[in-house]
Image (cartoon, rainbow, N blue to C red; front, side):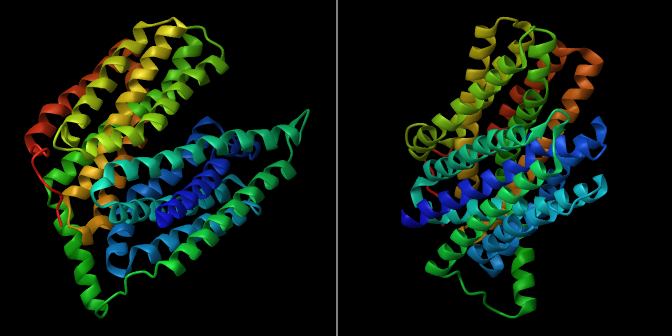
Length: 405
């Protein structure tokens, strides 16, 4: 448990550091550099592109050279890249730094989950959920701290250059703290020694990817997380817009609606993860299905609601549905794989996760622009529901199965 506690501490510092650099600091910094709306969106989203392309190779590489060693490389990006923000003077430089900063989560994310899965044994759902919730807390804490620093160092014309550099300095300090703590963990728990020469390691790298990518159960389970994140990305982008422009709420009230969803997800994930570990009663598969339906119903209902309390109730149910899916899906992917391929499996999972999350705002924007909120949200909810029978057909009932060795 000491190793798990240390991993959670590293996760908190790393996610806090990353969130501190992202919102609301990054969009405002891009604006100060002269970026327009489309350019600001690119600056915010370009780090996700890094994850889409590099999470799978990073996870597979960790299975070959050792997970803790690879995780430490990811923490190096958390610690070192923020210093580059201090020298950014143009929008192009900012986009480049954001892309490179994306390697931090692209490498660290799937590898850290693989390490937790390896430690968890029969408690994968519970421990992965605790680990995720700690990361969410770090993410939630980063945004207001960054905004507060900018606020107290702003003039009548807005945040000063010194204000932005102060924030990025704090980003660097917390990133270095995550690296130091991670290095201490690596020193205490020596990583697996890489065996064989270069050709043997390359063959192991390729075979791991082939084995995991060829398992339709892993792909189907990861796809459920991706589809759920499609709806979450769309809701994240358009719930505030709908709440302010259609329902007539203040920006603060719109933010409260999103906060309810996040807090419910964070608070219920560990309990639901523990429930998913008791597969003799329910099993992870049924919890994932219940979560998808629990997300689809309030998602479809939101554009038909205009009162604050009904919308808050819908967000609460959506947050519970997200917790049901996310507390079980990563654990189920780990169950379906050999332990030596946990890194590759989490890389596949993370790649599909990022694809869903990144495409949600894009697809949602196209649909809302063409069809309006009601039809758009209804169609996206239908995608959630339609994914259920496909998932049930491809992934067998796990209540009677034991985890893969």
